Length: 337
Image (cartoon, rainbow, N blue to C red; front, side, top):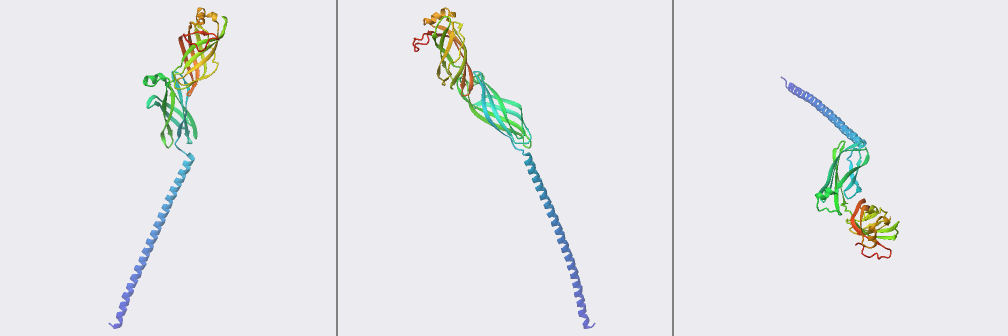
């Protein structure tokens, strides 16, 4: 073989190698390009997917906020607006608890039950349940009235230390049970404190009868009454209705000339004008004139204002003794025999 043929073989090997390298390069480039494109496609898909989910989330949140804003569901609120005593006497006290409930929702909410308790110094006075108490209008407010009756005999038989005439503290506890959409059944607890009296009837006496004009056909006189207030609160005496008997003969009643105030645990003096016919009294009248006195009976009611409201309180006196006094008699003499 000639020496010039060897380089030719080398060149062919080199060329074959170069061709192979070129093919590998082309193939590698193709694979790289394909991988890049696949990755780019995947990235595009992920990006599209992520963007779609974000848009869905934003849409749902936006819709939720709009629904919440449009519907506006919220928890109702309640407060004890006031406590009233429309009626009170020696036997019982009628109490009304006003509860103001506000409904912020666009639909009515039912007031399922009302539980209430009145206690004094931790001791139960009365409790109860009011079922199906009504409905609170949408976007409205209602004042629900809870009527309660305190029977004094029940209180005094349970708690010996609670005395007639005293004032005791109390606490009203109320639980309102409502059913609210979204929130479900809710309990709204409320409390309010105050004071309530245990009234005691006053004592009354006819101290004397002072006559201004005397005749057997008609006598004008003035009853001098003493009224003792045994309560720990003052009485504003407005009126009284009564009937009085002298020597078992009724001389009727009369109106109160002037209103007066009787301090707590104090004594008030009342002047009551009366007109009667002495000839109807027989010998009892002469006993009164001679200063011996005669028996009397007085029954009726007094109408008073108190810090807890108006009250009608009974008055009674049986078997008392009184006498007539003339104008020139000293009013400071003994009033009773």
